[in-house]
Length: 227
Image (tube, rainbow, N blue to C red; front, side, top):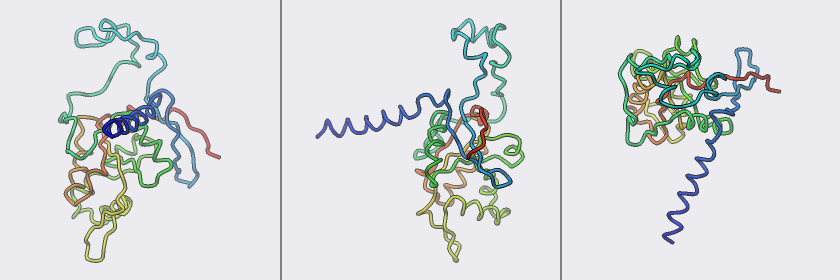
């Protein structure tokens, strides 16, 4: 019996791991609805320029002092701002799971067949309109953090999350969706502010995943009409 107790979780874990293999190169098809109500499909995967896939990964090529080697093509150099904002830890709550890119792609794959899963861009709308992960729903963090000032938006977002609002204004989380929330990366506190606000009102932490990475790490790579 002890062997079974050990092996079953390992087997499940291996299936989850195998499910993520190849996502960063193959991508995940995601269905979206445009402003005209038409359904399209996008393939979302890690944004890796073709020039970068041929580069050898070694200390001399990737690093020269504090910078990439001059032979590295500009498309492959990180322009990511590490000195802006406050760097966040790997874990923000004991029961909130931290996701990387592969976990987000796996989540998006399952989201296509499960309405109980929702990918949420927690940034303000101007950021969302500029660029986001295809298939993500915008719920600006300040709707939750400043909920008294954004009462209408707050209640609308709660209902989108599957939260039931009773007549006495009490909240019922029995049908709350499982969400993955992101913003601009590990220095961006907007997604964390949203998560903290959700926890304050009683949203179950086990239903929250936090994508610590940058939204631009996952990009639209193919756009096809969905028939």
